[in-house]
Image (tube, rainbow, N blue to C red; front, side, top):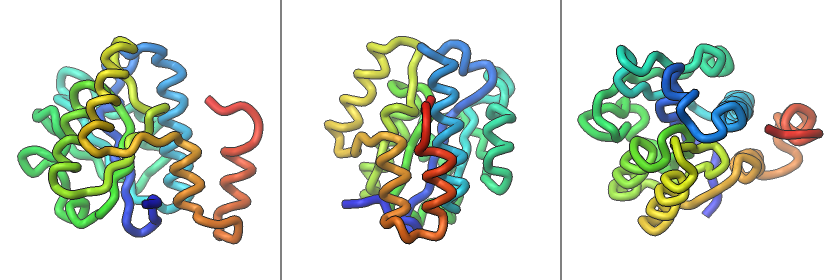
Length: 183
């Protein structure tokens, strides 16, 4: 199955100012998440940011919010972004969830497991999820995949949402995101 524009939303989990520095390879991870958010915004994919206990961990990185000014932001205290009605009602109707963020073995994992359990098609952007240790990231990804989530890359997301070279945003995407060095 392909990711389809109109059926999918990008769920950005807990990319918060006090949490980012604790991640393994934090600068590269942050750059890759920024790339994905900007590309999805360009493709008019709905975007939802979650914040785990923002009073203690800070809010979503402001530069990310600037890339998707119309995105919703939801505060939560459950590790899963799906638990306890954290997911806005409109988002519950999406068939497909593209997921990135942190931490791969805690909040991302629990959110993905609940989405898969609810019958959603879940695409975890493996190059845009992180944990404090690489081992925890790898274990989280392995468990998500074993549960039925699909591991994908940022480019897989973009090309599947574009679907064809005649897409109205293909030239913008190819010039901005698919030339030269990528984070």
